[in-house]
Length: 416
Image (cartoon, rainbow, N blue to C red; front, side):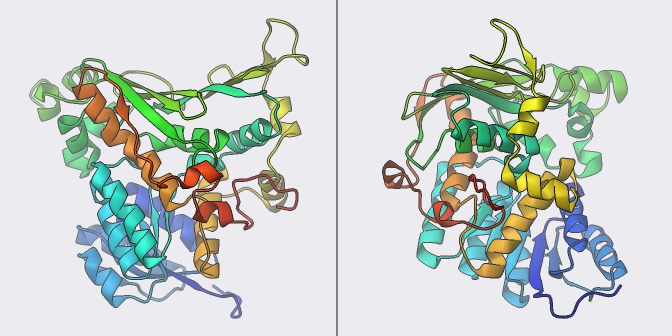
C-alpha cells in the first residue's frame, strides 16, 4: 500500500476490540493519516485479530496490552479510542486524560454521577479533552434537523423525542457465549441504560450548555418479559437466559425538563420484537417532524392538518457539512456518520484543540443513565440534574466545544 509520506500521521490507541471496537478499527484503517500505535483488550484472541487487520494494511504491528494502563504508559499514542464495556469507559477516559492523551469514548451511559464529575474535574485539571463519540449527532437527518431548528423553521422548540428502539434479544440472551457485556447490565440494572443516541442530537437542537441545560429527570420502567420468552423459544427452556431474573424492563421511558421549559422524552426498547428506530421527534410553535413516519408538517408551507414527506426538506436544509460530504463521497458505517464522528475527533487531536462534543456534553448525556436508575427505583419520582458546567451554561457557553470551529463542527457554517 503506497501512502503519501508527507501526511501528518495521527497515532491512536484502541481499548476494546470486540464487535464495535473492531468496526471502528476498520474505519480508522481506511484513513491514510491514522496510525494505530497500540491495542488493548481483556482477550488475547481479539487483540491478535486486530493486529492482523492492522498489518494487512501495510502498517507496523501495534503494541498489544492486556492492561489498558500499559497502553497509556508505554505507547506514543496521541489519542485513545475507548470501545470497551460501558462501565469501564469513564475510568479509562480519566486515565487517558491524566496521561495527556485525548479520550474518545464510545456511546454508553454512566454508572454514577461521581464518574461524570471525575471526567469534568480531570479535564479541568489537565486541559486534555474528552469527547463522547456519539455518531448519531453526525447523521444526515439529525444534522439537517439541527440546521432547520437553528434557522427557525420549527419556530420556538417545545418538545423533542428520541431513544434507542432496537430488537437486541439475540445479542442479550447470548451474552455469555458472545462475551458481550450488555447481558450483565440487563441482569442487574434498570433504567435508560443507552441514552446518548437519542439525547445527543436533541441536546444540540436545544442549545444544552449554551444558554440551556437539563433540570430534572423522571423515569418509569415496564416489567421484563421479552428476553426470557425469546430465550425459551430459541435457545431452549434450560438456557440460563430463559430462567434469569432480568432487572432491566422491556420498555423504559424517561422525561427531562430543561431550564428554558422544553421537555424531552427518551425511550429505551430493546427486548421486544420491533423494527429499528431512534424514535425521533422535533416539535415547535411552527411545525413538527416525526422519524417513524418520515414526515414533517410546517405551518404555512404544508397543507393544514396534513403530513409531507421529509425528503425534500432534507435536501433543502442539508447541513453544509453533509453537502460537502456527499460531494466528496459518503463512506464508512451507519450511513457515513461513523466516519464524520471519527474525523472530528482526529481533527481535534491533530490540532491539539477543542472537540465538537466536549467533556460537559459527555458528562451530561451519560448522566441520564444513573439518574434514570435512581428515578425508576423511586417509583418515577423526579430527580435533579447536576450542572456540570458550574453555571457556565448561563453565559451561552459550556467552554470547550463552543470554541471548536473545525471542519466537522456541529454548528451551522456556510463553508464546511
